Image 1 (cartoon, rainbow, N blue to C red):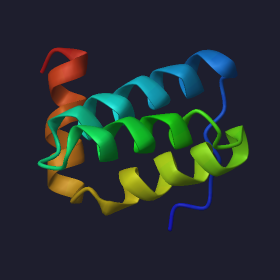
Image 2: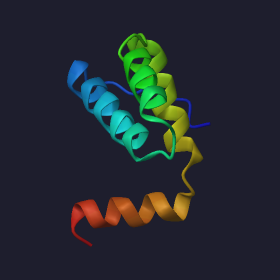
Image 3: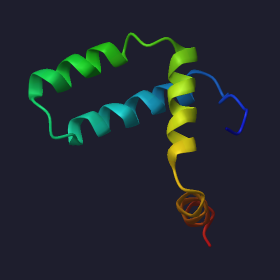
Length: 75
């Protein structure tokens, strides 16, 4: 939608993986499914993870994103 790629190297992608893993832990699914999903998450190539993260951002309502941005910049 926005037509950009997330950049910033491995640090951003590692944080993305950690955030996704935390969401997996919060999901109402079995522990074995959580374990499997987190194992598979570790196998996702950086390009695919970048696309997944971009799609997740695109799924957020603009008003929600603006609220989050304002919170992070201290408004």
